[in-house]
Image 1 (tube, rainbow, N blue to C red):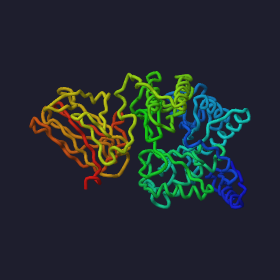
Image 2: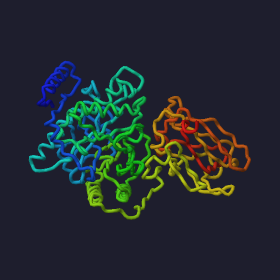
Image 3: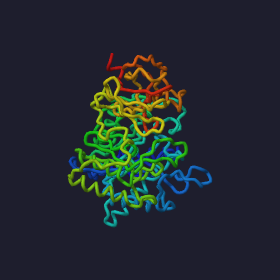
Image 4: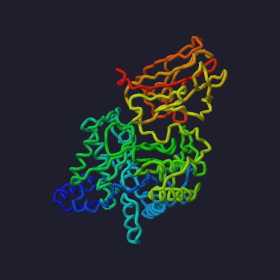
Amino acid sequence: MLRFSGAKVGLIYACILLFACSQLAAQPLLTPWSADDLAQIESFPANQKRLGTHYFYWYDYPGQHFFDNAARTDDALQDHFPKAEAVSFNSVDWHARQLADCSAAGIDFILPVYWGVVDNYLKPSVAFSVQGLEPLQKSIARRAELGEKSPKIGLFYDTSTLLPGIRGDNQSEKYDLRTAKGKDIFYRTIRDFFYQIHPKHWAAIDGKPIVVLYGSGFAKNHDQSTIDYVYAQFAKDFHNIKPYIIKDSSWGFKCDATTQWGAALKGPNIFGKVAQVGPGYNDGAVPGRTTPIRDRENGDYYRFGWNRILNADIDLVIVETWNEMHEGTDICPSREFGRLYIDITRHYADLWKSGAKGGEDIVLEHPDLLPHPPSDKGSEYRNTSQVSFSAASSAGIYLVRGNEDGPTQDATLGGAKCIRTPEARNTYIYFAVADPFYFDLSEPIILEYTIWDDEHNWHDTQYDSYDKNATLDGAYKNTQRIFCKKSKGWVTHRIELKDARLVNRQNRGADIRFSVSGGWLAIKDVTLKKLSSVR
């Protein structure tokens, strides 16, 4: 889609881009918008409650993102579109049906999950990202002709496209977003998306287009200058307009707001005025996946999340997701659930937008599958996270229940409350570390834990690490084995973890587990401290 702006410089720039595209066949047709174009932005008022959702548009039946074998006999979808043969990112009709259903669900804006690869946009595996945006906008125009309003369009920047392997670059290291090259790639991905979307379709807050960032772990490093560069360059390229950036909590810089991926699996995430919620998770149809399953419980898990949101002071909610059928996080119409989740979403969206409050928590059949509390804000454990069973408190570390190889029970030993493994059974105790405290960082941490020094032969600790030589690409790295001295008292051990990654790759999203042999293990408390805070 090429649109020449009124400004002379815009015409020159557009011609240069057109020439580059014709020569290299590697770019979409990009548009530097004029001031008149940008004047057509229709913003959400700052105090208006807004509901968005991740919009996956990489599907093109039967060739793209439907089947996992060449014979096309085995699909990789957990949930299924009602009419698969009608699904295509190239189809104006398909997008129009999705937008109609989004509107029915009370969705105010969609976040296309963008895999645009700067300098290699027409690479076959990611070309859908640019090819699907024009049919999407045509579907909005068609609906407008019929007098039907459509959700606005923001950006979900899938930052995995920073990986050299996805970009098609001949380098082994991830990009450092503190360098000029890294900043340029990071920024141009955002800029080029909005060059392809007409400003009248932008989802914007006070004139600022919404950008939601996926996790930071796909880059080598970043700092405040990374995002400051985005703000400054965007203003230069878009007539002093800056984006409204909502970061994943794993990013260390300051921006407009924070969210966190994973609500469909782990429960609603609430950060300040922003919440993320999902209906459940199941990627069992995808070959090689071992992620835990979060049962939908006939919609109650989704209702549970929304109820938490009603009882919080939230201005913006992101539903995870509209149609990620591989991971079973979809709320769009499906063969499995019909329109149930459209109806649930609309019901709670109307309540939330009207200012209604929720009641008591909905009773879940599997409450033990919530490893993290639903409202982690991160500020309480900036440098230290701790769970204490003796004091019945936790901030940033949580016992993960429900693993078949990790059964635990409450106990009291030496006058202190604790948790322990069953009698005479070699087993594990799993813990999850809240992502706001530590997720895919490169900072040494100190692990301290207190165990009952009796009734077992030895124990060791396994943590999610960067060490690719450790078990399952580093998800289970062993520390030094500690032998029991049979002192019949509480003993505290201290271990420095120099290469911790902690990206929830252990069973049921855990980050650390304790292994016991020749008896049972009891733990009273576990503490993590960032090394920089104890020096």
